Image (cartoon, chains in turn yellow, green):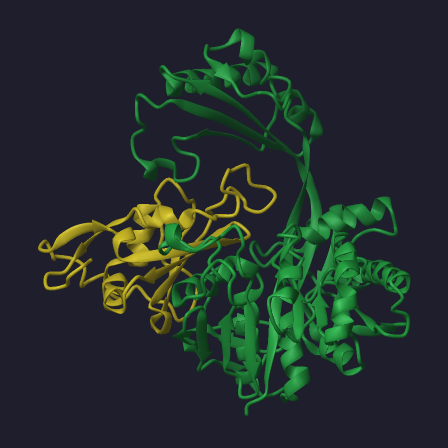
Length: 134
Length: 455
């Protein structure tokens, strides 16, 4: 699966930093973020938002387009793009080929991608040492 | 004192809470009531209705709603912007005019329609002139589906709505305009913003995006602290307090349920977002990475810092075309071994369909309670699960295989795995699929028109 998207002004920044950090506590994204998702054709978008300002850098580092693509492997057919909105402490992900052709064509219960949001919040990430969550 | 206008959202889609507009009037002072009815697929549904009856093709709910509110709208000088006109704004406006006369408001109410978005009659002429209407998702030219096209509407911007307001319209009824234009237009009209003041236009666009889905920005469908969001039985729909310099506040009437917080507004800002640096509208391109939010008081979020740039030379066109047919059938299997039974029923059904040699574009099985929403991410199912809904959908270009499929569900009740129930709805219905085809058209090809109707 490719995660090299076509969009501009997006980045996979942080992919390197996330490697090799075996230390720190593992937790589900739902503990540090909330989310809302929607659709555009066969693409689902997920807005991932830090619950506290200090969690945003963790999201930026850990939740890369590549990791999201891996998380949704077998669930979506296309690539994943990521955009950053530090002003809102949020990341926006576009998941292509996510909705079984989308809109009125889709046979899925979640034809409009409304609950891809919480599917992403299942993802496990490592919290760097020194950052308190709770 | 800064001049502030209050724009209240009354509907977030066709089918939204019918109580909301009345409550927006009752709850406190407002200047404008904004009602968004049109989703991508709505236009094709309306098109179908108009083809059966030339007096239809708009959001019918809007007419009785206006009848019940119009006296108060007139008394309090509250103006309405609504895209309730769908594919037939004139018929919608005629119905509202008739209500106004019956209510004794002749001469007291000015109703305007905005048209010019409908490209259907000019489609062949435009294709012949070299406009290919390439599908924005797939790149395919429209000629591949031309014969099945049902509707084609360009998204108009705020311009014609501003014109209608400046010509004195109390109720502006439009066809396909951008959802955000319904909120932006009152600001441009009231504050006299320049059409090249991109950042102000972008701010008004952001305001429109925040309230275009109604209560979805004021506590509805909000994940953060959802169990403690107060009184969702009586949610306050959002209100924008806009000021001349472009900053605005998102709030709701006092005493209503729901919650306006940085979390609720942020969730809505990201809803259906693509590239946040270029939110393209006919009037400007807004940069969502510039938005600053601040909780200025309880249920008040201040929005500022919005920047934007000039729009493109194109308008988006929403085209709908008949694609084929689909049907979805469900059965519920109960404990013990609910999941095993549902899976067994699915494999029996698939074997029978295979033997019938039916051709489907897709045959999809979901197990509701197990994997329907999150797929394999949901993890291993509880082996002792109390019940599972088997949900099987098919899609085909032809009606026949889909029709045949709908007759294969019920037999399983008596000749398949045991402990099955939940089929009270009878045989699944065959649905026509009207698919969506997004494309672009140069702005110069589209002329918006404003017409004032006498009441």
